[in-house]
Length: 297
Ligand code: NGD
Image 1: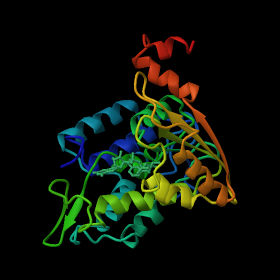
Image 2: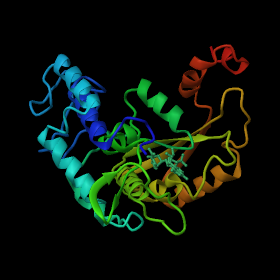
Image 3: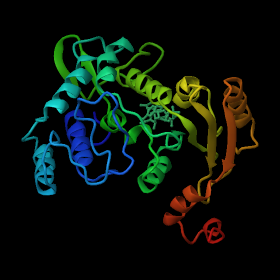
């Protein structure tokens, strides 16, 4: 079942296209050097490429409504191409044996890069990272890019007995089913996202959990190891603590020392900051009366 009720892959993709063909995150939107696809959208404020579905806000709104009602499918040609590449990776296949290669056609089709110094990774801090990147429009998480946006909060799989995309009754990843369509997808797109990062990159970590950094997480097992030291000179970690919550780990803790050591061994500099102030402001919007927030001003 899709984690967000009523949202399907198809709708999710179409919504992304609509948002990007409008003014959403227009300035500084990641560019697509591959070009040629729908996806070289919105690189400048007000730009609205002709291949975007709907040339006015009114039409876009109509399209969203139609999509919600299921009246229209993925009508834009580029949208169809991307959706086909996406679904071909897993339809009619064993839901536990998806490979990275299965997603390669999709990855080749959607080449999207984030400007240098604007990449934000996160681990155990998804909500805050997205709230922050939603406000600080210049920063991009994986979910602010096309593939991450399409898939975020969804679950999907195939079934060897049908050619349908299943969005319910998909197996969970476990030792007997290690390569699900969803888990392999996130590994592949996270790797690609990290490979294309440059300059200083940022990661938002959670210091209220047991460990701020975990080698078992996607950030710790995939993204860190796919940063290119010739392009990424610094990893800057922000260890955030829940307002009114406990502080179990911090920049001084052993998990961050481990992260620093991994990063330094890869010839990348490492910086760490507890409770990065701009992100703290975002947390404080919801808890302005908390003593931790009154001292911020
Ligand atoms: O056991 C699980 C489980 N563990 C994590 N997640 C899980 N889903 C299950 N069904 N069962 C999902 O992965 C969940 O949606 C989490 O929000 C998400 C990330 O897990 P987390 O918080 O442990 O962080 P990771 O370090 O593993 O991955 C976050 C980084 C971030 O920089 C993104 O660029 O890796 C990328 N990412 C990976 C996996 C999934 C993003 C996602 C995503 N948007 O769901």
